[in-house]
Amino acid sequence: MTVFDILKIACGLALFLYGMQLMSDSLKQSAGSRLRDILAKMTASPVRGFLLGLVITMIIQSSSATTVMVIGFVNSGTMTLLSSVGVIMGANVGAALTFWLTSLSSLGGAGAALSWLKPSAWMPILALIGIVLIMVYKRGQKRDIGLIFLGFSILMVGMDTMSQAVEGLKEDPTFANFMTAFNNPLLALLVGIAVTALIQSSAASVGILQSLATTGQVSFATAIPITMGQNIGTCITAILACTGAGKNGKRAAIIHLGFNTVGTVVWLSVYVAGTAIFKDLGTLAATTPIQPWQIALVHTIFKVLTVAILSPFYRGIEKLSRKIVKEDENEKLSVNLLDDRLFTTPSLAVARAVDVTSEMAEICRDALLQSITLLSAYDEKVAANVRALEERGDIYEDDIGSYLIRAAGCHMEEKESREVTKLLRVIGDLERISDHAVNLVESAEEMRAKKVVFSDEANREIAAMVGAISEILVLSIDALLHNDVALAASVEPLEQVVDELCAAIKARHAIRLTKNECSMEYGFILSDLLTNFERVSDHCSNIAGCVIEITSHDSLSVHHYLAEIKNGTPAFTKMYKDYSEKYKLA
Image (tube, rainbow, N blue to C red; front, side, top):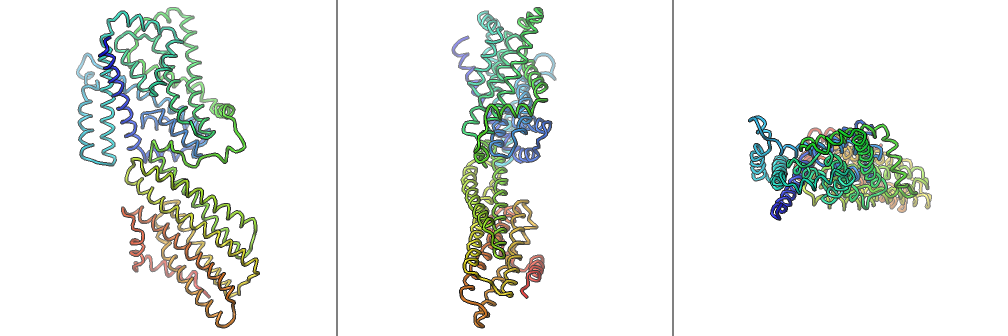
């Protein structure tokens, strides 16, 4: 082999890695919404988890990418560690599809039908379609499909290049003697681990082995241990990904490593023992050349058998990972709500941001609803809890905001980009609602300290306002949580009723002042309450308007949209009349 052949192999490997990366990234981008739907159905069922891991890996063509996603979900608390066991097993089996695809480059020979199965026959067509789609469409799913086609074409060109570079080794006795040395199972195992860990791609490592197999100089005795070593070497990606992760993220990486290590130890031991007992079998394995498709078959059998022996112990695997990465007292407090590892699949990062924003919405809603109860019955524990919820809301806003800004820098579909914009707008309104909850607590404390007792008439007015505020808050938060346009549409007429209630209560208070039925001091507290209520309703209106505008339209002109729906539509008028009657002051 000349230096030019070595350079050709390096070039083929570079093309293979780039094609695989391009295809994987484009598949993740194109399948983003489907990935989100698939992961949304995640349960603790090991069978369901296995199937999901299998499907996701077959979609994105990378078990390492699936495992990194799993680490991100486990680390952020989206997925339980027990659920991740089945997903990781499924991901390992799903990776075998890639090896079957790369084995296609070795097809050829007799028959027109078989010749058309060889990638070199149809790959140029695929590449041409891909280029046309990329040039015509600047963004969107069709462009992603074009990138998938082009990535796969580049991948197969890399495979062909490597195969051509090693073609001269078929009759090279030196190379034949060199490959014979790898009939030692331990040495072959270490080579498989080292090469795969070095290039951080089991697909590329298998591709190299399949290219060498086309020379006819790679035996079963060499390929089987190397194949098992490749499965251990690919775990390096997950190990690197768990750096900086929480305890559960590290445990998920340990499960991935343990799955492949235990499988290798068991089945390599069976192989070595079998060839030692049955000498003829060992001789046959050492002298029979392996074909590229048979390497894919060995991988598939190894993965399936490993799942077969380990799946009954999935609960024990989770418990063992907890013993290896021990728990501490602060573990629950250290779970990250959001994980940067999900940026490898922006649609999943956005989906996680939506989930965390939903948690924030519930926190802020609970804070305000609890603060309202203090106006009629003050409770120190409830007051402390409202302040604690407000502090959590602040943390959520900071974390979600910075996460969304980083996510906005990723390439994503227009729908997801609009979702990011919506969340960035909404978290500010949610945080302000929790601030107003604390303001109401302070008003309740002032009433308690000064022993303020409103008149029966004022209490009835406040009760009507509290009812309206509670309803508008629940409506807007539910609309956000469920992306419900119909619920969001019912917020704005109620917001207008709240504004009119505030004006009416202030006018009635002024009349009571002139009649000396109320004091200025009481009036200041009442004014503070009404100001907070009115501003809460404004924030609810903003949230609902944002849900409607971004869900139903392409623009972000929320105020323009609200102005339109206030313009006397029949539905708005009816809801406005119903709310006016419901919260009419006596």
